[in-house]
Every structure is written in C-alpha cells, then in structure tokens.
Amino acid sequence: MNLTRNLLIMGIPVFPGSFLKLKCFNIYPTIEYFPYFGYFKIESIVSLILNNNRPTVRLRAFRAIDDPETCKRFIKGHEHVLTAIGVKKVTSSKDDWMFNPAAFVLIVESLDGNFVYGGARIHVAGGTQALPIEEATGMMDPKIFDLVWAHAQSGTGEGCGLWNSREIAGYGIGSIFLTRAAIAIAPKIGLKSLFALCAPYTINLTKAVGYRQETGVGNNGTFYYPKLDLLATTMVLDDVEELSQASELDRQAILDLRQMGVGARIETLRSKEIEIHYDLGLNDLEGWDLNRIIQMSNGPRSITKENDPDKIIIL
Image (cartoon, rainbow, N blue to C red):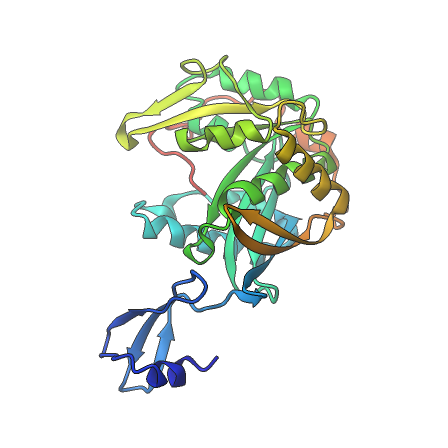
C-alpha cells in the first residue's frame, strides 16, 4: 500500500519529527515524517504479509556456521528488542555462537527473508563453547559442569536466545511455536535431552512441552542474580524423542512438526491465528558429527573468567 498517499487521504495530521501509530491487524508501525525531504521513514513497517487477515511468516532452522548473514540479522533483531525494553550494554554480549559448529538457529522471518520477527537457538554440548547455562551459573555452582557433561555423553544441548519483535507479539512466536520447533529438530541433530534456564513466567510453558525442574544444582534448581533482581530456574527435558512428560497437545504438535519437516500450518493461540511456513528439514548438515562435537570440549567445562554471575550471556 502507498502509506504516504493513504495517510493523506485519511486526513492524519503529521508534523516534522512526529511519530504516529497506525493500527493494521494488531501491528503497529512507527512512522516519522520528514517534510523537507518529502518522505516517510517507516521504523517498523507493516512488513507482515497477510493471508486471509492472518500474518504469514517463515520459521526455518539452520546450523549457525552455514548462514552467517542470517545470524547477523538474528543478533541485530535481538539487540533491538532488548534495547527497547531497557536492557543496557547489549553490544557487550557475546555473539561467538555464530562461529560455533555446535550452534543451531531457528529464525522467524518474512517469506522473502527481508524482515526478522524472532528467533531461538539450540547449542549442542561440546563445540567451541560451554553451554550458556554453564556460563551463566558455573561460578555459583560448579556442579552444572558435571551435570551437563553427564548428559552430553548421549547428546544434549540447550534451548536459548528466545525472542520476538513487537510486530509479531501476541501470536505465540516468542513463546510456544519457536519452543516446539526447537524440540522438533533436536533428534535430527542427535540430541536425547535439552537444558533450559528459565525466568519464573516461562516455567509452566517449559513444563508443558516436557521439561522438569533440575534440583541437583543451585538452590533446588534456582539461581538468583541480586544485581539484576532476576531468578532463573534450571530445567531439563530428558526425552526429546518420546516427550513422555509433555502435555498431549504440545506432544502431538511437536511430533507433527517433526514428521512434516517442511510445510505450512495455521497455528492458533488464544483465538489469534498465524500462518507459519516451517522449514525444519536441516538438509544442509554436511560433515555433522555429534561425537566429534562432544569431544571438542575435552571433558567437563570449568570455571573461567567468563563465568561471572552478574554478566548473564543474553545473546
């Protein structure tokens, strides 16, 4: 649509440097008018393709080292969201994961790939980095290193870096659908279990998809970061294949995604529908060797200068 023409037709007053909110199917772009240059700057453009009034996006999975450009877009989008909610010094967070052969990315983007709306990652235990949960909690309780190493022998990893932009808020992308997709691809990578470090408001969600609270580390599984006033809970999904502890709804949805691999689904959350074109095939895994990845860590990780409990690895 021609936004400039339609704004004028609607009679919306626009002043130099002013910002407007234009509601379009619960998507709010920010529009700044520059009269001296004769154009509108669209901060959050109405970039979601709508099909029968439903947002339509693509959710695809890939190994980080196979697509560095998309990794950069993932990082930029995540940084933008964190900055918008007041998280400081986002740029100091590590992005070494994009060079880690044990990192996998799930990204939610427009069908043409020009816009990114959210994402998540799976880090496989091994590779060139400790898991984010080890980096975040190791100094407070070193038992996390032995716990991860024990699970790593049969293949484990961590779901992390989950985020979504404002454009897609309320449709379940940053909560349920990315989480389900991550669990769906885990067996294809060779994983038998998954770790997660959860904020209090996400614990019920992780339990619904099959995780349990791991009480063998921290304070009954929890870690408190006084400077951030943040409580985090260690969760473990013991059987990513069978999902015996997941709710029947979530278990069936994950199994359906696993079987489909590539295809479109209409997903619904609280009566809001979104059309997601899934690409979870992971067909480009040339040279992937889980055993080699595991052995890259040369045994359990240990405390390093990176394990500062006041510097949680956000990205």
